[in-house]
Length: 413
Image (cartoon, rainbow, N blue to C red; front, top):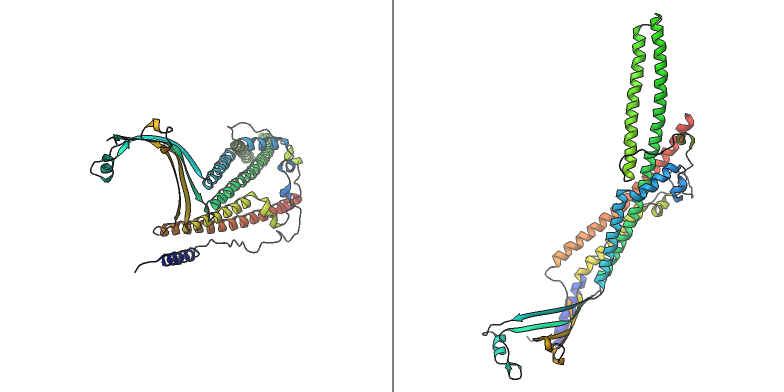
């Protein structure tokens, strides 16, 4: 049966319809429900949030502020995070370049010899390359020109890839901010722990001195036969026990100093601090705000949200792999068997332009696997987003409870 032009057109339309119906089966997941979000932390409604206070206004100890400033400049984890930002920025530029046409300029030269008993060899043997001159056995080929290729992004595959790269870049910025937040907290915790150990050491040293004085008194009483040797040994044991505790605290002080030095990205050295500030500084009142403020105040939640957005864009880009791709290519330049002919004759000019529409058929299973992988990564990012929100809420709730109980403990003491 002979196919007419109308039948061929109808078959093509039918094929395209079935093709796109099949592609519609692979749609990205749009749901990212995180469940009901609590309205308060401790049945309190407070719109003021201490998280909005700048850390330099939150801390008043100048020594601590200097340590945090040094940590932000020299911390190694933060330096690594900054390089992640640079990598993500370059990735955005690379994905942007895929959307634009690619153009190359090139010069090539070569030599070719074809067999006589071939269609090309037989034709060359019976033809003149120039009037009165046969085609030489060894034929040179010189070329100079421009070539271009452009994939038309009709299904937004490349644009979604770029959006994904941009979202990942923004997520690395929030990742850096999260590193800074943790860094400030770690330096502050270690610093106040160091002040606490200094005060413990001071108390233990005073206790040792008092115990030594008591031991001297007991020795005198023993010489006067008021007490026995057992009492002397008991006071000696107490002195030795306190001296042992002093060495333990000194070791803890050294380890805490080195912990701060590590956070500051430097080798061990003494930490400048004021012991009196530990007693004189009173805790400030904390305003918890409302839980929904976590979504914009915590950089780890913003980072997870951007990673979820990037995963969605990756799924859409993977979905577009099922659709036909349209490529336009072209070339413009000069081609001749002698370099002297490249520009001397208009017959040396060459140009070409072509359009190509390609749809995957045989390798659809591989594309489907890539799409399913992207979809699984999107689901994973969605669960990670929910996990980080839940973790952020629980962390704040725990710390607010801790502050409340510490305040009661301080008042009781």
